[in-house]
Length: 72
Image 1 (spheres, rainbow, N blue to C red):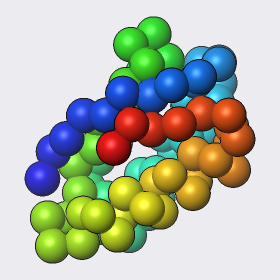
Image 2 (spheres, one colour; image 1 turned 180 degrees about the vertical axis):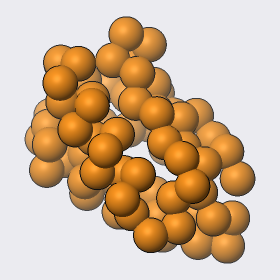
Image 3 (cartoon, rainbow, N blue to C red; image 1 turned 90 degrees about the horizontal axis):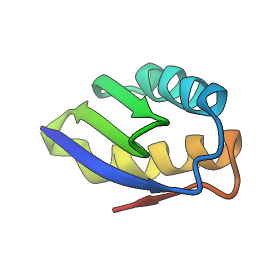
């Protein structure tokens, strides 16, 4: 399943790159893109575990940039 999410308070391109790399390492994630310019997260992940994977994605993003929020 491929979905797009709006990101709020993503402050730097370097943080976006770190988030993208960390998300791609998560189990069940096929592909992910974090766009600093568009303030968007595009993720392609396992349908059966999508909600569980998104909870992990939120945790990963909070570690990189605590102020950043993903609008689920």
